[in-house]
Image 1: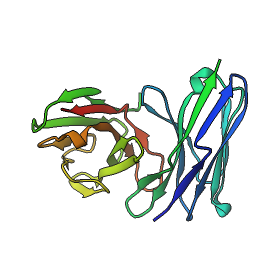
Image 2: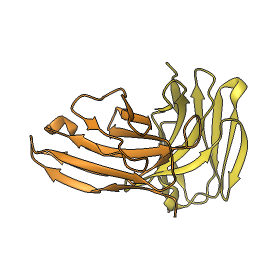
Image 3: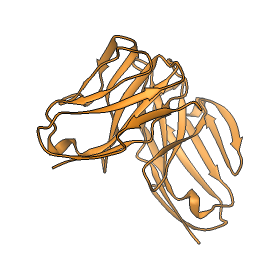
Length: 109
Length: 112
């Protein structure tokens, strides 16, 4: 099955810093999503990005499908950005999302 | 507002007492699924449904049942809960295929 690896596993930054989170996947995919799990446990959709680049405010994402990786950029970090960031890809046979282990981001004031 | 709702959000129960976690979506999505999230194990799929009356097992279906009698609802049933089912549960829905999947707010279940 598809393997999804995220790096780094942990990231501690000062407020205002920029960061890049990486997601590698082992096979071609038709769906890749980025999520933010906040400290209360809620999963928040950030991007649906099987290929190309998207931006939403301070966040942007790029997926290079041919090279099997995706990057999530967070600029001018705020304490509310803290939490765990997951990427997940679809396993086409049953549309199950296959999840990476996540990147735990802590933004210090 | 387009959303996936789950109830209850928090539940503490005892071993063997049947419970149901409801999931409802208002986006007319065909595909719905349930995941559980456990520390160190990530999110794992329990059951999924491609459409009304069509359900199938995910990776960890033991101890759970589901039904899909209506397009909008996909309840998760624990007939005899056990402590190893203590977890954070998420319901998700999607138009199907490789489209965006939308998640409910989660249900924290503790089985004593």
